[in-house]
Length: 269
Image (cartoon, rainbow, N blue to C red; front, top):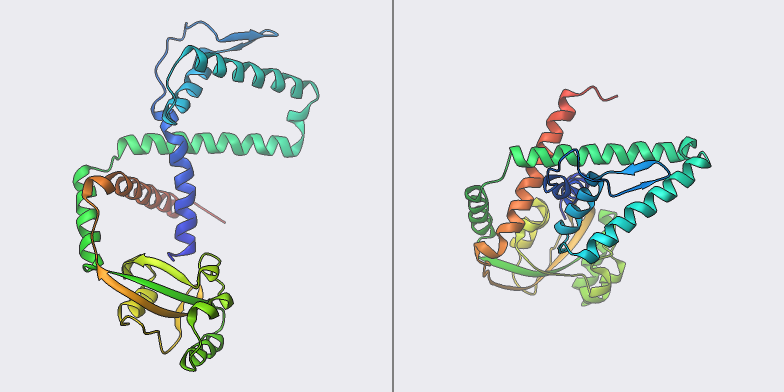
């Protein structure tokens, strides 16, 4: 239930991060290395193979003769198809040229992100500090809740009135605009209040088990009716189990901040 614009930015960054390790892991090869193949006079350089191999390794593959043959075959097939496309002047078509420009842009962006990550790493100390902050913010309790999201405040108030008349939120949840919970009786599972936007989390923390909000709760998504089912002591996972996830999130935040600084310095019309 984070800000949609923030989620969109972080999703874009996640895509760049997913590609970045291939560039970071690319091994240095001699310029005189033997080409992978020559097709109709066009040389497929060793460097092209190195990039594919680094990407495969980043995804968990192990270098082997079978992998070498597969990657070589993939490069040859791509070159054959590329040459066939050029013979038909497909690279001159406006939509194809645009896609080529977009692919080049994404590759450059990924390379830039890779270099930024290497130059601005997130330290273990920073990850530990963030872990401690999150544990303290959780307040030692987690909440199992349900909600119904509607567009208008009047709709939310009508749902509250129906709850007062004895209807169950689980049944009324089919009215919700939240596709992730409407078919599950509005259930949101176990969370700490800080996992939600501020107004939602504050309202949730103010409830006692078995009660629901007496007035609609407004967020940027609409109006919510929230019901608290259970509360239990929070058992935070050990730092080592969450360290990698925290490192990745802090890394994404650092990249996001850098992108925002680039945007502020740029002329965007």
